[in-house]
Image (tube, rainbow, N blue to C red; front, side, top):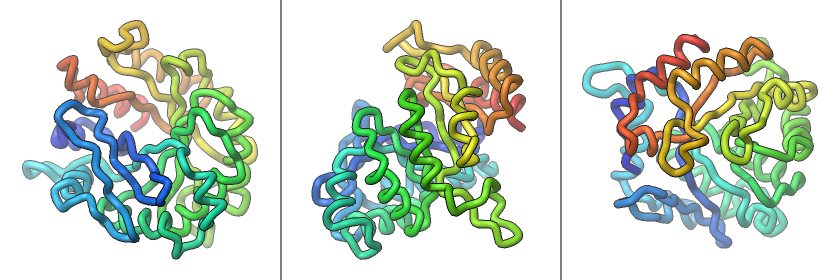
Length: 275
């Protein structure tokens, strides 16, 4: 994990998603670094955090002040796919005392996490997804999604997860906040043709979920999918005029650093459009 913590804290971003973690067949949780020079490591197993103090301190630091400056980050999520979720929801199940639940409880405490993000791009099983999300909710997490396709699946998940909650996240007046409270819509690569307004209509009609469209920053992996800060401003502004959105975001900070881009330029776009 080699992100520029100070730049992330001081460029206006309020939410970060750590990519990516995965569930092993034992229920242990593994962090996949996806960054040259970093190592993959099991971070929770046997109901305990086992990822080491240095990694925990690094993650917790995202929500603390740096260099005597108050950071803007107030929410940190982890992103994972759906590998092994269906099998583990079937046996031993989603109970609070299962190894998987205890591992997520331990990881949340060690990393001061706020939400788990579902980046399922292949399995799309409604029943196990809902059971897993409810398990996480009981452990203190919020649940978010990062779809690029299959609107029907995500709408079904959202409707079930938020069926007994209100359409406000304030929690005031006895209201219960939404479990699935954000949809980070991929508007690049396989989701390049996505319309945030259409997705917000599909997800918000019965579940109250607000959409946060994501664009890919300038990169050398798929340059045609890259978006400059100026282009991001234009796209976010146009989408927000059509349907009031919950914000905007970027994939990913690795490319910001590799391409020597400016965190502040990209952050300023979001601050000006979604104050």
